[in-house]
Length: 65
Image (cartoon, rainbow, N blue to C red; front, top):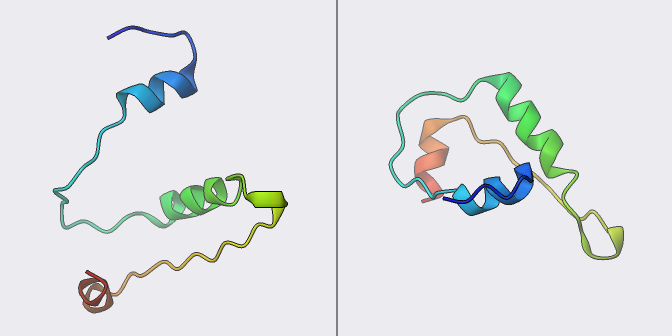
Protein backbone atom coordinates (compact mmCIF):
# COMPACT_ATOMS: atom_id res chain seq x y z
CA UNK A 1 0.00 0.00 0.00
CA UNK A 2 1.27 3.45 -0.89
CA UNK A 3 2.32 5.92 1.77
CA UNK A 4 1.03 9.40 0.92
CA UNK A 5 3.14 11.20 3.51
CA UNK A 6 0.04 12.55 5.25
CA UNK A 7 -1.06 10.84 8.45
CA UNK A 8 -4.75 11.71 8.01
CA UNK A 9 -4.89 10.43 4.42
CA UNK A 10 -3.01 7.26 5.36
CA UNK A 11 -5.42 6.66 8.24
CA UNK A 12 -8.46 7.12 6.00
CA UNK A 13 -7.10 4.80 3.32
CA UNK A 14 -6.02 2.05 5.71
CA UNK A 15 -9.04 2.10 8.04
CA UNK A 16 -11.09 -1.06 8.42
CA UNK A 17 -14.51 -1.87 9.85
CA UNK A 18 -14.61 -4.25 12.80
CA UNK A 19 -17.69 -6.36 13.27
CA UNK A 20 -16.46 -8.72 15.96
CA UNK A 21 -16.00 -7.27 19.40
CA UNK A 22 -14.39 -8.51 22.58
CA UNK A 23 -16.28 -8.42 25.87
CA UNK A 24 -14.10 -5.79 27.52
CA UNK A 25 -15.09 -2.42 28.93
CA UNK A 26 -13.55 0.64 27.28
CA UNK A 27 -11.39 2.63 29.69
CA UNK A 28 -12.78 5.97 30.90
CA UNK A 29 -9.81 7.97 29.59
CA UNK A 30 -10.31 6.54 26.10
CA UNK A 31 -14.01 7.46 26.16
CA UNK A 32 -13.09 11.02 27.16
CA UNK A 33 -10.59 11.28 24.29
CA UNK A 34 -13.12 9.97 21.77
CA UNK A 35 -15.75 12.45 22.97
CA UNK A 36 -13.25 15.31 22.90
CA UNK A 37 -12.38 14.45 19.29
CA UNK A 38 -16.06 14.18 18.38
CA UNK A 39 -16.84 17.75 19.44
CA UNK A 40 -14.19 18.99 17.01
CA UNK A 41 -15.99 17.41 14.04
CA UNK A 42 -17.20 19.97 11.53
CA UNK A 43 -20.88 20.89 11.54
CA UNK A 44 -23.08 22.83 9.14
CA UNK A 45 -22.68 26.55 9.74
CA UNK A 46 -20.78 25.69 12.93
CA UNK A 47 -24.10 24.82 14.56
CA UNK A 48 -22.49 22.10 16.69
CA UNK A 49 -25.81 20.28 17.28
CA UNK A 50 -24.25 17.16 18.75
CA UNK A 51 -25.48 15.14 21.64
CA UNK A 52 -23.46 12.13 22.77
CA UNK A 53 -24.65 9.31 24.99
CA UNK A 54 -22.23 6.81 26.50
CA UNK A 55 -24.01 3.62 27.52
CA UNK A 56 -22.06 1.46 29.94
CA UNK A 57 -24.92 -0.73 31.17
CA UNK A 58 -24.75 -3.98 29.18
CA UNK A 59 -28.52 -4.52 29.39
CA UNK A 60 -29.16 -1.15 27.76
CA UNK A 61 -26.52 -1.84 25.10
CA UNK A 62 -28.36 -5.01 24.08
CA UNK A 63 -31.60 -3.05 23.76
CA UNK A 64 -30.04 -0.66 21.25
CA UNK A 65 -29.12 -3.39 18.77
